[in-house]
Amino acid sequence: MRAHYDVLGIGNAIMDVIAPVGEDVLLAENITKASMTLIDQERALQLHGALKKSSDSLSEIAGGSGANTVAGIAALGVSAAYIGKVADDGLGKRFTDSLAALGVTANTAPLKKGEATARSLIAVTPDGERSMSTYLGANVTFGVKDIDPAIVRASAVTYMEGYLFDTDAQKAAFVKAAEIAKAAGRQVALTLSDSFCVDRHRAAFAHLVDNHVDILFANEAELLSLYETDDLNAALDNVWATGTTTLVTLSDKGSLIKNSGDVHEIPALSVDKVIDTTGAGDQYAAGVLAGRAMGLGWQDAGRLGSTCASEVISHYGARPETSIHQLVVDGVTRL
Image 1: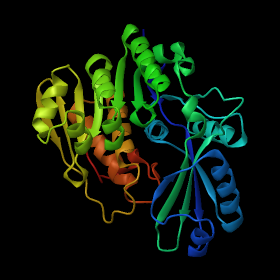
Image 2 (image 1 turned 90 degrees about the vertical axis):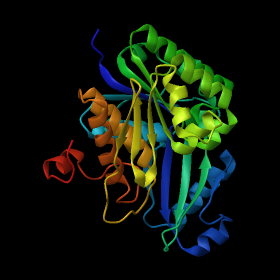
Image 3 (image 1 turned 120 degrees about the horizontal axis):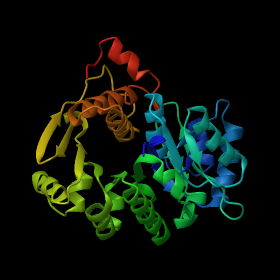
Image 4 (image 1 turned 30 degrees about the vertical axis):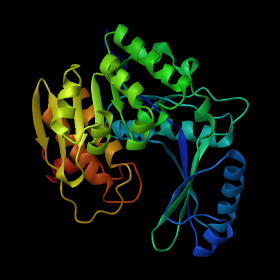
């Protein structure tokens, strides 16, 4: 049966709250400069209020790695849906509404009691440094009950964010989504997200990849960590032994795609100036998955991924600001 959605993303639903502030605010609020600190709800609500008072241009952008990827997919004209966990509060409604405004079907049943909607409170000082205080909020309650079988079955690819693969309940939710997708003849994609995630849950990630994943996204460090090796070719062989297509990003060296035993080298696209690498991996995945949905072969899909990554590192923020279609039309990149 034809899929209703090309890609379904499952991930941490986090609102990015970006506040340009002076150095004095960091000192007054005890924020460690140029760091990322996990905080609890009480601290999150207090700091959110303080940044609102201290910044005259505070902005809120629906974020999280998986949400950034589906936003990029939608920007390429490909149908996308999203499952995450927000609270029944104003920030949660704004998160869901922002995805809907992009054309993404957001299936985020709000949490009625308990944790608030997750947020990453980002204090940006005049020197451009970003100091982040992150509250995971409602995401920590994500579990099997949040997986809607109908939307999984209706999606050609279910793309899962490794950052959310943390608690036992979250791991069980990933397995459930994968099983539903495979039973419906759909594909499952996974991004490892971060070496720290892999180090914490290596055995569980390996089991998921071996038994449930068709398409794996990782950077070099994450893939080497998964198989505890310093030999990239050996790691690629380990993944392909399960029949899983692997896409490995190599920063400014581009990426590698291993499929059907072949390794394709995809060059990175040059940019005039790298402004912010945040979201490069997310948008690479968006380009690849959208490209596959458009019927592109792996190499051309990889080139589209490189195009999307190059666009996002040319400005602040983890989502595209320039039409990728227009870049192709203008001859900036060719597929």
